[in-house]
Amino acid sequence: MLLSRQVEGLVSRYVPGNDVAEVLAAARALVDGGLAVSVDWLGEPCTDEEAAEAAVRRYVELLEALHTAGLARNAEVSLKLASIGQGLPDVGAKVSLENARRIVHAARAAGTAVTLDMEDHTTTDQTLETLRELRKDYPETGAVLQAALRRTEGDARALAFEGSRVRLCKGAFREPVAQAYPDRHEVDKSFVRCLKILMAGQGYPMVATHDPRLIRIASALATRYGRAQGSYEFQMLYGFGADEQRRLAGNGEKVRVYVPYGEQKYGYLLRRFAERPSNLTSFVRSALRSLR
Ligand code: FDA
Image 1 (cartoon, protein in one colour):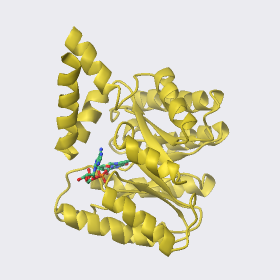
Image 2 (cartoon, rainbow, N blue to C red; image 1 turned 180 degrees about the vertical axis):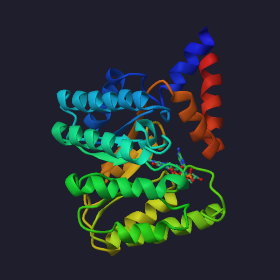
Image 3 (cartoon, rainbow, N blue to C red; image 1 turned 45 degrees about the vertical axis):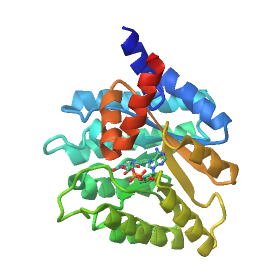
Image 4 (spheres, rainbow, N blue to C red; image 1 turned 90 degrees about the horizontal axis):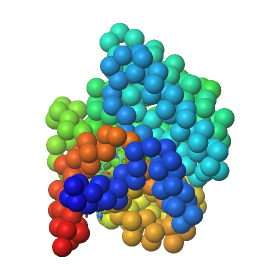
C-alpha cells in the first residue's frame, strides 16, 4: 500500500494526473512559471467508431476546459489520430479526418490549436494527408516529423512554408531499417539536416528534444538564419529536463512542455524508460530514496 502510494507520487512527476482537473492544475503552474504547454491525453488506439466518438468528446471537453480556465492562449493540445479512429479497417482515414476536424474546430473556438502527434512509419502518409486536409480550413494545425525516418528531410522541405507549425523530434518508434536510420548518430545528423531546413524556411519550427547538443545547435541555427526568439520554440516532456526548460525560458526562449494525462500513464512511462534507460535508473533511485 505504502509502496503503491510512493510509486504513484513518483509517476505524477511525469504524468501529473488522470483527469482534466489535474492536468489543468499542472498546466497552470507551468504557464505561471513562464512556459507554454501542449496537453496530451493518453488515449488507447480505438477499436470501433463508438470508442473514437468517446475520444472526440474527451478532446473537446479538454479544449473547453482550457478555455474556461483561461489557459488557451498558452496551452495547445496534442492529438493522436489513432485514438479517434485512424486504425479502423477501411474507414480509418475518413473517420479520423472527420473526427479531427471536429477537434480542431473546437480548438479554434477555444482560442488555441492542435498538433497531430506522429506514430510509427505505417501512419506517416495518412497523418500528413489528414494534416493537409485540416490545414485548408485550420492552417494553425501543427505537424510532427521524426528525424529517425529516412523520408523526413523531404517532408521537412514540403512543410517549411509560411504559417506551417512543425514539431521536429527524433522519433519514439522502433522502425525497420528500410524506413529508418538504425544508428543514433545517424538520427542526430538527420535531426540537424531537418532543423536547418525548418529554421531556414518560412514556417514555425518546434524543436522537441532534451538532447543538450541538439538544443545548442538549434540555437546556433536560429541565429544563423536571423530568427528572432519566439519565431520558433523548444519543446520538452513534463518531468524531463526541467532545469533546461527553465534555463532556456530564462534566456528569453519560448519553451513548451508536453504534459500527458490519463489512465494509460504506465505505458507512457515505460516507453520513455525504454528510450533512455538512465531515466529509469533515476526513477528507481528516487523510489528507493522515498522509501528510506
Ligand atoms: P535522447 O533520449 O535521444 O537523448 C539524447 C541525449 O539527451 C542523452 O544522451 C542526454 O545527454 C540528453 N537527455 C535526454 N533526456 C534527458 C533528460 N531527461 N535530462 C537530461 N538530459 C537528457 N516521438 C514521436 O515519435 N512522435 C511524437 O509525436 C512525439 N512527440 C514528442 C513531443 C515532445 C514535446 C517531445 C520532447 C518528444 C516527442 N516525441 C515524439 C519523442 C521523441 O521522438 C524522442 O523519442 C524523445 O524525445 C527522446 O529523444 P531526445 O531527443 O529527447 O533525446
